[in-house]
Image 1 (cartoon, rainbow, N blue to C red):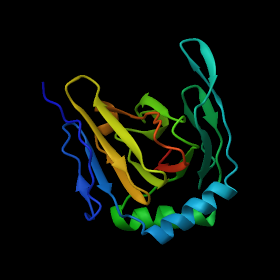
Image 2 (image 1 turned 90 degrees about the vertical axis):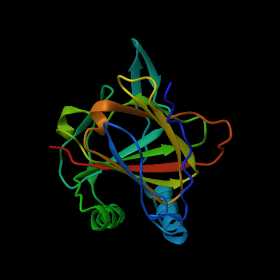
Image 3 (image 1 turned 120 degrees about the vertical axis):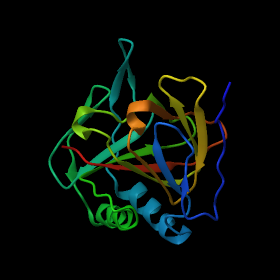
Image 4 (image 1 turned 135 degrees about the vertical axis):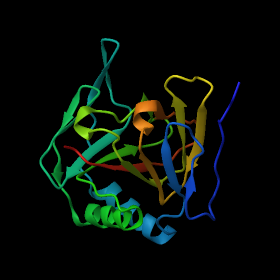
Length: 206
């Protein structure tokens, strides 16, 4: 059995392309330096109007195991897992982070979904960012701030193909091409994590 489950610790590398078939995923471990990452983390943690929605799983309703917020440069709503969110206007901090991503990757975005994982008990289950409003081959840019957490990937049709990496404070993970069609990802619970992590996932909604 081919096993691609690995932990990536390329703290000295500017960009690392994950060696995955049917996907294009780039990891920038040092996208923001520590001082700037700290600044964004503290600002977003304090000033974001976090909310906790209910989700339905196998007919039962549960509080979502994380807090969220949605911002956009358009008024297009975003629906996932039975939840419809209406964006608030981009603030200066969202523009700054989006512009930094665009300068490096040449990708542009209309919307950012923020996730606050308060500690290791908060998580995000297996899913793909393949909602119809994201279009074909969506580009998802994910900024990690705060606690370092493991990010898992698994192929949708070949169970032998799995991968994991540790997302560093201030890092950028860029998923594009056929990634969302062929792979699922999750952020599992962790008993070892006691501090918050903020994740900003930039995307374009059509």
